[in-house]
Length: 113
Image (cartoon, rainbow, N blue to C red; front, side, top):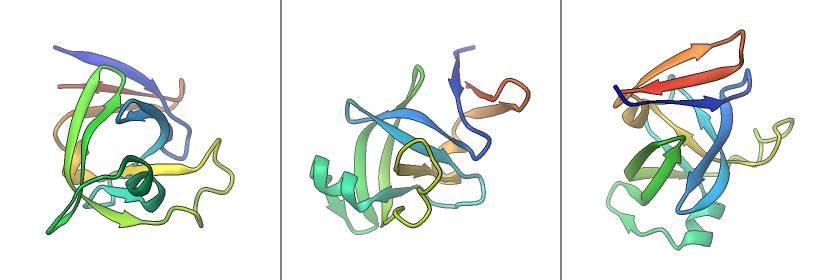
């Protein structure tokens, strides 16, 4: 079983990588669709399709995801109080592909297949 550990805050945000660059990623089980900040779309010139934007490389620890239809949003209003601006919110369309175990006492998320 492949497994990796990622440090996430109590708010569900943590470090990840989008197209080779570290960004703050939020895990949101209540969000049905993965959302990407408009700044990421512009910075990486993400290709648009009928349903949203494609992100070819999203990494959390050793896990790699390909997002085929991320919704364009602005996280500017909710990034206050975080260690940095939220750039990507992984919704249930993406996180349902793996098993997430939340260890609240150690403030980490364990991701496994």
